[in-house]
Image (cartoon, rainbow over all chains, first blue to last red; front, top):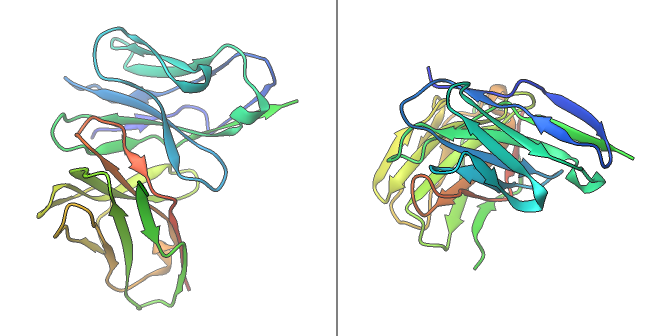
Amino acid sequence: AQSVTQLDSQVPVFEEAPVELRCNYSSSVSVYLFWYVQYPNQGLQLLLKYLSGSTLVKGINGFEAEFNKSQTSFHLRKPSVHISDTAEYFCAVTFSSNTGKLIFGQGTTLQVKP
Amino acid sequence: NAGVTQTPKFQVLKTGQSMTLQCAQDMNHEYMSWYRQDPGMGLRLIHYSVGAGITDQGEVPNGYNVSRSTTEDFPLRLLSAAPSQTSVYFCASSFGPVDEQFFGPGTRLTVL
C-alpha cells in the first residue's frame, strides 16, 4: 500500500540550532512530494514541494528539502531555527498526477527551546 | 478572496445524529478534499473530488458521504455519528492535481 512515514513524532531543538525532520515514502514510479506546516490552532500551509527537476528544493521561512529517489526520502532541513518555527510539520505525497489524492505522514512536532 | 471556508467551527453531536459539514472555495479550484486529523495519525483522506459531479473515496470513507454539485461547494455528510468520528475535519482545494492544496480553518467535531 502507498504510505508516508515520518520517523520522529517529536523533535526538540534549541534556538539557532540546525534541524532535520525525516520523511520516507513507499516506492513508486512517480511521486510528488510536499511539506506542510501547521501552527497551533490553525490550518495547514505549504512550506515547499518537489514535482521534478532539481532534487534540492527551497521553501518559505528558510526551509529546504532534498528528494532522494534511491532512499525514497524527502527530509526537511533548516540551518538555524527560531522560536517561531515551533509547529507541527507534515510530509505528504501524491502518487498520481491525475487525482490530487494526497497521503500524509503522521506529523512531527518541532519544539524550539530558548 | 475568502479562500476555503468551513462551517461550523465547532459542533457537538450525540451518537446516531446526522449532520453536514460545509466547505466552500472561491478560487475556482477543480480539486477538493476532506481530511480528518487525529493525534498521532496525521491527516487522513476521507473523500476527494476532481471536479463537479465527480467524487471518490479516500483512505477512511466509511460513515461519510460527499457530493459535488458545483465547483465551489463540497459538503461532507455524517450519516449516523459515532464517537470514533470525534476529530478535527479539514477541507482543502487546489487548482490542479499536484498544485498546492489550500486548507480551511477546520471544524472540531465531538460525538458523545
